[in-house]
Structures are given as C-alpha cells and as structure tokens.
Image 1 (cartoon, rainbow, N blue to C red):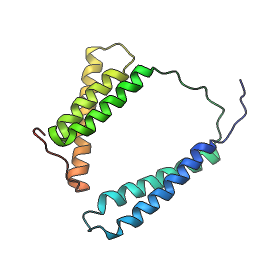
Image 2: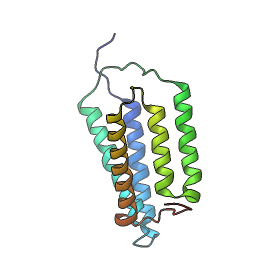
Image 3: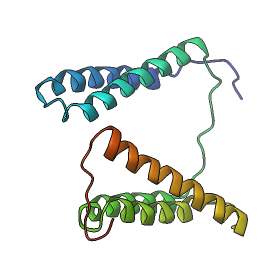
Image 4: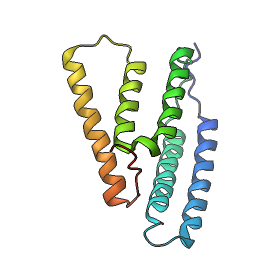
Length: 152
C-alpha cells in the first residue's frame, strides 16, 4: 500500500465552497429581522469556522490514502428512508416525538454490535440528552419555532 502522505484536495475545495456559502448566508441574513437572523447567522459562522479549521488541518497534516470503507447498501437506503420520513412527519407529529422515533430507528439501523441492557440504557440516556439539548438550543437560545404537531 502507498504510504506517501497526500492532501485531501476534494475536501479542501469543498470546505472552501462551504466558506463561500457561509459568507453568502451571513450576508443574506442582513435583511431578516433581528430575531429571524439569529439562526442563519449562527449556522453561517459555524460553517465558516469549521470549514476553515478543516482546511488548516488538511494543509498542516496530510494523511496517507485511506481504503474505502465497506458498507451495506441496505443500511444506506434505510437511513435515507428514515431521514425523509422524519422530514415529512416533523410538522404533523412534532419535533420531539418524530426525532425520538427517528433516533431509535437510526440507532437500530446503524448498530453493528450486539445489544445489551447496559448499552440500551446508555443509548437511551444519551439520546434523551442530545435531543433535549437540541430542542432547548433551537427553541430557547436560537429562538427557532419548532413544529409542535399532534404530539411534542
């Protein structure tokens, strides 16, 4: 196998594109209300910062070529179906309920390891903390109106 370090040119180019999109999004939010511009500007700044960090990392630490990871077409398709269903059901069912169902489905699809009661508890607690944290950040900090739907 070739162990010569190489730079991730497609990753650097993609990151440069994300910096441009982030700048355009930040600039485009200037016409929004002060409350309406919080979320797009926050996401634009995050895109710019993370893309610039990736470019710096890719330039400073070139890597050896990696083998393509093996994957299951069934799992990839199932993830797409779950994410599409989540996006369509979000407004009808509600953010928290739809997200909990999607998180559970994605966890079942993506988990290669054997299920144990301990891991089920850990995944449940972590999922509740992440989804609750996301709900809090979007609803309270970024002031994004989340769909309520029939349920939460």
